[in-house]
Length: 340
Image (cartoon, rainbow, N blue to C red; front, side):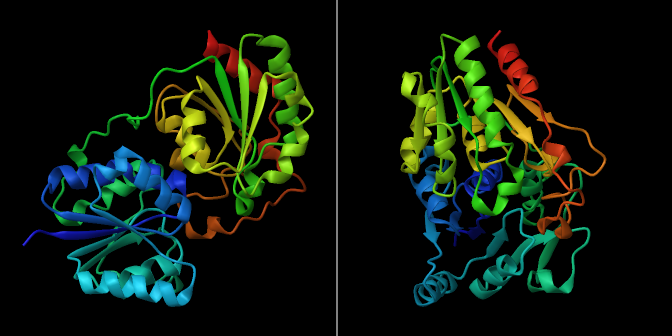
């Protein structure tokens, strides 16, 4: 009988992309296994079903419905599959990830053990907890979760995360000035993004600019609508994910906060310039070259989304976000250097 593995997806497009190398390693080492993914967001479910990178690895993908009755039905279906292994992909600092794995009742359940783990996180519901290593990228954190399956993760070489979608790039700069609503504290000032766009129009005459806005960022579109009247700027707001991928795929360069679209751009082969505030780019920074990470080196950062459970509840100790006090000139300089 072939082995059956269920991967329980992290919460977000970017995190799921960073789990792809682990999925590929699993498929390579167990080509005859059934490998399924439980998605926690509709956007993730959409992405893994249209991108060949995921379709080539996964046998089935499931979406956990928001409706409790429908969610129970999905969990029953997964329970009846009798998986040999369930793996909660990294990060998994909240109780419900480990609880989901327990309810599916695989024979062996793998999760992560954070340095400051406590009983309320439910890690005791797993049969194996792989220690989180401080200082490494989420790509490698996920690969480490495969060690209980007998995979020598020390010998795994991770190739660049380049989608089969990636191809020829035009003279286009993509910009994502937002983030999901719950992570709004990661955002560089919209006024600074506006200043950056104006400088780009003046100093980079050959380039088109595309600004991307998701459903959590629609209020930001008003900051840029007047600039878009000239024809060199396009606002791509609340479009279907497949269309957003296509639009980003045209971009030679992409400027972004720490966000899921940053990982999409990096995954598609764009030169990625990312602006970092309180979160830890060692964990979730762009994985592929070429890339440029811009941050202000203040003593209190990183304080959010680090390798510790406590950092998932953000609270700034200062009156203002000193870590996001980054000059427009610095970002523009990085952009011009990339173009050269």
